Every structure is written in C-alpha cells, then in structure tokens.
Image (cartoon, rainbow, N blue to C red; front, side, top):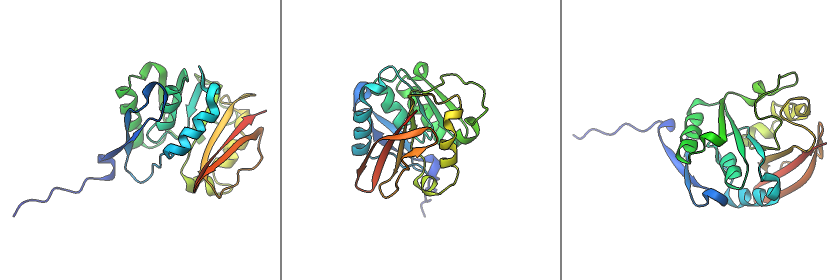
Length: 206
C-alpha cells in the first residue's frame, strides 16, 4: 500500500500575491498560509497607495504588522526610499526576509522580529529610521475590533514615541463596519474609504 505523504503544516506552505504597481508591478511574493495573515485586497491596496501618492516619494515607511511584507514592499515599489518591517511571528518574518531577498531590497529595508507594541512606546529611545513619514498599520481585524485592546491605546500614545512627528501619516486597514474615531491621540482622520467589507483610514499627526 503506497505511503501517504504527510499533510504539510501551515508554516510549510505559502501562496503568492502580486504587487500592484510601480517598480515591482506584476512581481509575485510569498504569502504565509498560516491562517494568521490576511493580505489587503488588491483593489483596496491600489486605492490606498493612489491616495498616498506623492507622500510616498522618498518616504521612510514602517510596516508595523508586516505579515508577508506586502504593504511595505508596495510602498517601496511606489517610491518610498526605505521601509522598516516589524513582524512578531517567526514563520511570517522568514517569509518577509525571503521576499526582500528575492526583490533585492535588503539595502532599502530592515526587518525587526518582535511586537511593535513592545518596540515602540512612550519613553522608547530614538531608533534608526525614525520618525516615519508613513505608518502602515494592517493588524488582524480581530485585534483592531477589540476596544480598548492593545492597538488603540498604543495608537493614542504614538505621538509620544520616536516613531511619529507632526505630519506622520498612519494608514489603518480595518473592516468596513468599524468606525475609526475622528481623533486618536494627536492623530486626526484625513481620509477614509471603504470597498465592500474592508476599508482603510488615513490619519495625520498634528
């Protein structure tokens, strides 16, 4: 009787997702199939980066819940000069590292393994590549739906950290039914758009 192949574990398989536009338009990168990574849908992602437009040119970007690194790579593809990727899970961090290597982006990026909630908080000493011009914040929807949870208090105090300054843009991916407050700490809503069940909101630090 032929042996059955063992069923792959979630961290042993990967799907792919395509870069929408810019320098790496059409290139595919790996996306972990662990069940914990939910890439922003193509239409929503395209709209987000179209809205950001010239704000990405030569910008320093932080992709704070990197997953596959898709948003940060898209930002570099659209003109950002540098991106710091933060990812807590070892499996996902390895995928981000592989994607950056495949696209030869090691000189234009940094990968930090850890939780952004621990890394960035009031009183944190200055870090390389801070303050950021653009923050990409696309955490799991269950995390962002929890109030107060970890995310919202962290965002409320973000202006007191080295990561943000006046003019820093925070781009949040979230379920369409979730209403982002008009003001969170020193961040105020500058734009918000929904596409079916998903949405993004851009806040500017004042």
